Length: 251
Image 1 (cartoon, rainbow, N blue to C red):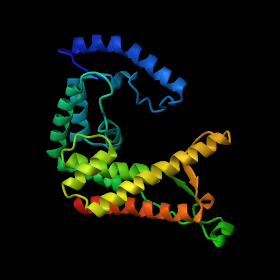
Image 2 (cartoon, one colour):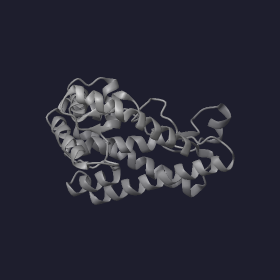
Image 3 (spheres, rainbow, N blue to C red):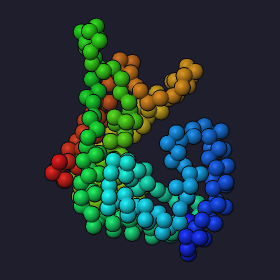
Image 4 (cartoon, helix red, strand yellow):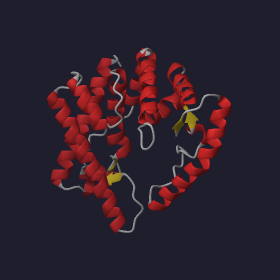
């Protein structure tokens, strides 16, 4: 939650009023199926219910003194968007935060380095020999090993180019307009993103129909020939995006 306050005392008073409401909303969403965040990244967390000045201070620390924890937080908080209320306040804060990022190439490089550390698997199925010997990995975490790395690449490049948009596909469109990606690269990334999201949703639907708890672990051996081929191409698009980011920051 982002709110306006003219003093620390007023911020404290506003927070006391907003937190009970935030918790009721979080609990209602949990009952609707949007599971309670185990990391407590929710509006009912007092550390995430802040005035504009408090949020700016938090972003400043995150950008000027980045540690692993701050880099992880940045992947969440840089994607904030207005759901209800005065969007102009969020837009004003985002412009100031983007200014901080643009003035800090060290932070940009650290964020890029963290993003490029995720290894993108090939998506190839295990051979019969590998399966018999218990070698190779037959599972792909479609969120952590495919979707998240793509989203992270687009976030870093969007921040570097002063893009205020939070949607990955909107960011991709802006970056393409500014020449970061060619039209062909952009189309490949867009199709890869859509396919990976579709595969993830289909996987969840199958698990729910079988009475299982949904997860993001897709077993490659269960994919048909066409799906396996499209998945390999989608993963190659993610690797290509990582290489573009690595080249920009000389990683």
